[in-house]
Length: 435
Ligand SMILES: O=C(O)C1=C[C@@H](OP(=O)(O)O)[C@@H](O)[C@H](O)C1
Ligand SMILES: C=C(OP(=O)(O)O)C(=O)O
Image 1: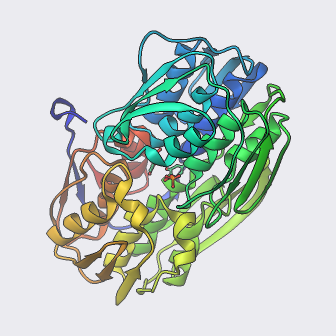
Image 2: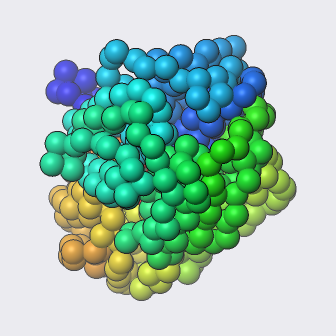
């Protein structure tokens, strides 16, 4: 975010959190719903679409490429798909805003088009590595020019793509999804093997749109030459947005919160397990399936937390929840050790460095390591921290403020609107003192 838009928050100590907290729609599912319905044949109805800046940017890109999208009410979209080959060139760059997911998935989708496109992003996205998608897409026959591996991406159209078998060097749903989307346009089959299973929304949604796909945890395979048929999509509440409330109620004495109908895809719920290992009291009620996805109400009650050695196998299943986990660890009794999470260094900010700097400024003992951190829990003081324009860092320090000795001032919070519009109001409605 530019200086002109700098927005600071102050989070003050609170007494207890109570009530129902309805968090907005899942970001990953919302991005994919827009892309797939845009290139499907017929009209798709999306409910629960995240009205965040990231997902709206993706919708705007599809509109720029010729997809008619109606927005009858908040969270509702009617998408008139143009078919696999119906997108048309835009003479303007396509702005993905802050969204790594938007840019990387669109790179795959646009590699298969007959026309050229330019993908751009904001200051933070412009620093994020893109070779992880452009290298394997080049192996499929795509041509995407970068600035030394960074955005903008110049995607050259009119290339004949062919399928590849690709073993991902790092677990990444974004890379996997980019290859699968390019694979829709490729001759022969595209096969992706992951070092650890990641979220499988692209695979599930392709199947819902009628595209034949074989997939199991850590594996996906499809071939080109089929059609996507419009369908209706219900987007569940975002587990990653729920995470802030799970940690908040766990650490603040007297708290009980209910988070209704949260998406519980097992590739997203690593934090649940991590918090439970730390002693958290979180239960699930009203489990059901919605649009093929597991959903349930999360009930979280305050419980004393203790430090843990985080099992490395949980890392990909909670990759966006680390800023919140760092706060839980800072309050927990004893030491928490996090390893195998080097990916945190290439998110909207370097999340290991940003959290370590912030927690240190609040008097927490934390040691950074190349792929994680060692955190000794105890008291959090008041003070001033910088979110570096990273939404998840800003919300995590808002949670820390609940239990700090004094107010925490958090710099640069406007980016919260990328993933969680209305966070401040929702937080205050259940007992935060945030302004
Ligand atoms: O596919 C997705 O929707 C996402 C995948 C993850 O990124 P990586 O694929 O880079 O791990 C995650 O951090 C991001 O918030 C959303
Ligand atoms: C990493 C994130 O998103 P993206 O990669 O889409 O910017 C996130 O939301 O935490």
